[in-house]
Image 1 (cartoon, one colour):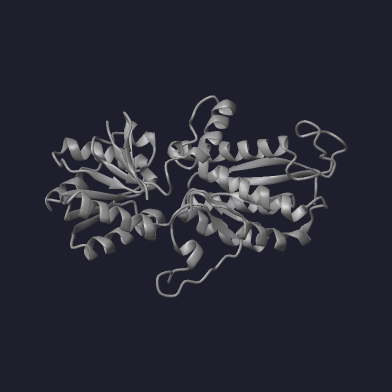
Image 2: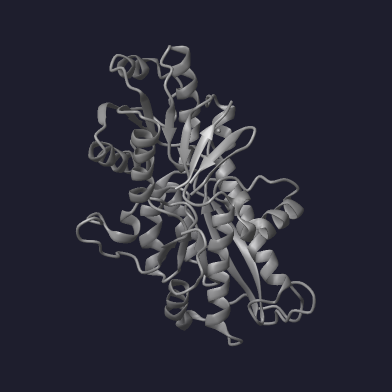
Length: 371
C-alpha cells in the first residue's frame, strides 16, 4: 500500500485516492478464432451491470472487460469444442431491474456464469435467482460483507449462497482503512457522515464509524440524501454547524461530486472522503475538489505489472483506456468463469449435470491477484 502522485489523482493503498482538481446452441464447423473447433456450440457468459444511467461508465467498463476476456479465450480455444459469447444485461443500478436481468439469464441453459453486479443492493436480488439455477456469479465490485458471510458476518459468519463469489475487498476492510487514514494520518478527529441510504453506502459508513470511535475520533453527525438529489444545501447547512474536520460520503460519484462542490461553495472547506463508489474520473468532472479522498478495493490497475497486458489489450480492442474502476476486476471475474468452465468441460459436452462441478471449480479458481 504505497502512495504516488499523478497530475489528476494520487493513490494510497485499501487503496486511497487523493483527488486533485479525483441446452446448447449447436453449430456445424465454424471457428471462434484461428482453427478452434466450435462444433459443440456456443456457451454464454452473462454480465449484469448498469449500462445506462449515472453509473454507466462503471458498468460499461465491466461489460467491455468481460468481452475482452471472452474474445481472448475464443482466440486461444480455451474451452475445447465451444465458442463463448457475452450476454450483457442492463440493471440500471436498480435491484428490481437486476432481478429481471438475472431471470433472463437464468432461463438460458447456455449461460455458464455471470459477471456482476456493480451494486451490493442489486446483488441481493440477483443472488437467489442465479443460486436456484446453480449459476456461478462472480462480482468485480460488490463490497458489502454480508453477501458472502451473512448479516452476522463479524460474530457468526455463514455463507448463504454457494454460487456467489467476488474478486474485490469488502467494506469491513475498506471502511476501517479509511477511518485509520482520516484519524491517524490526516489528523481529522471530528467527522460528519452523509450517505445515500443504499446497502453499499450505509454499510461502508457503518464500518468507518465504528473504527473512527476506536481510534479516538468522533462522528459529529450523520445525514442521508437521495442518490439522485442535486441540491445539498440543507444537508450542508446542518453538518457545517457541527464544525466537522472532514465529511465521509457513503455512496457513489453522481451525488458525491456535486456534494463536494457545493460544500466548498458554502464555505465548508474540509475534505470529502468516500469509498470505491467515488473512485472514478467522473467524480472530478462532477465537482470533486483538491484534497478529497477515496478508497478503492484493490491495488491501482495501472501500477500493477501483471495488469499491463490487460490495459494494452483493452486499449487495442476499445480504442481508449476507459475500463474505469472495475474493469480489471471484471476481466479477472470473467477469466475465473472461463477457466473454471474449461476445467469442467475438459473436452466433453456441457449439460446441466456439470453445474455442481462448475461451482466447485469457480470456488477453487486462482490466483486472485486483487482480493
